[in-house]
Image (cartoon, rainbow, N blue to C red; front, side, top):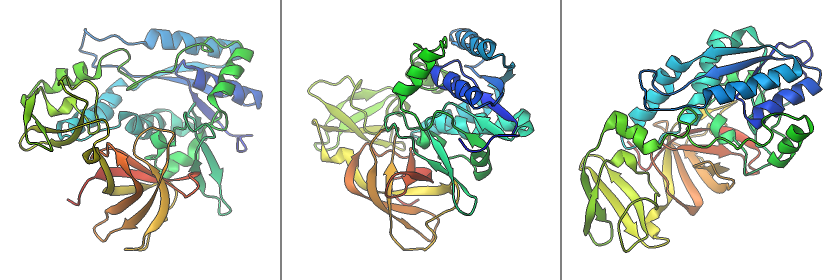
Length: 366
C-alpha cells in the first residue's frame, strides 16, 4: 500500500469478505478509516423485489464493532437508479450489452459518493482485486491483481483519472485464498460468506424478470444464419446477448446467438458446438477512455496490446489502431467468441499488467 500516514481514509464496506479484509489490512497498517456503507436497491416503489441490505449491514456493523471504527450509511439509491439503472435499461433497449458494475464504480462508488462524502477524504479504499502503481513522473496507473480469476481491473477501467488518484485497493495484491485466510485469522463474520453474483442491486432477482418489468415483451423471429430457416419466436431481443447458448429453448441444438437485428426484430442464431459465425477477430472501440494517459496517439499506427471483452481470467493479444474519427480499430490474434456491441473492451500492456482504459465495442464503424 502506498504511503497513507497523515491521510484521511474512507473505506467502503459492503458486508462481504473482500471489503471486510480490506478494512482489517488498513487497521493492521495503523490506519483508522471511517467506514461507509452505500445503500442502493431496486425501485423503491416496487414491492415484489427483495434485497440483502439488512444482512449486508449486519455484517458491516460487525466489522465496525470489531475494530472500533465509525460506520455510517449513505443512501445513494436514487442516484444509482438515475445513473446506472437508466443506463442499463437504455443500452438493453438499443440491443446493446451493458455492464452496470463498470458504471457503478465510475458513477456511484467513486462518483456520487465523492460528491456527497468522499471529497472530505484523501483516499477511498475498496475491496476490489486490483492494484495501483506510481511511475517516475508521479502518475498513478491501474494494475492487475496477481489472482487472474478475481482480477477486477475490467470493472474499474472507466474511472476518471482523478478517481484513480484517490483509489486504494488494500487486498489487490492477494489471491482470494489468502483473503479468506486473513478473514479466518481475524475471526471476521464474513469469512465464510459467499461472493456476490450478478448485478449488485438485484440480489436474487432474475435479470430477465427485471428487464421484462421495464421493457415488456416484443415477439420476433429467430432465424438460422446458415439456412435462413425460421426456428420460432423470441419474446424480446433485450432478453438475449451475443454469444448466448443456454436458455434459447430450441431443439436440435446447441444454438448460439450471433446477431440481434433491432430494425427487423430478428434474432439470428448459428448451429453447432463451435460455429465460426459466433467468433470475431475484428471490431472497433467507440470513445476509448484512458485511465492515466492515452498511449495510442499516432493515427494509423498499430499498437500491440492485450485485452479483455468480458470478466474473464483470459487475456488476448491484439493490435489497436486509432482512427481519424476517434474510433479505435481492433484486430485480435485469435477470434473471440461472443463479441457484443455495448460491451467494454479493456486494453492492457503486452504483459497485461498496466490497464490503459476501455471503450464500448462496435462491430463496425457508425
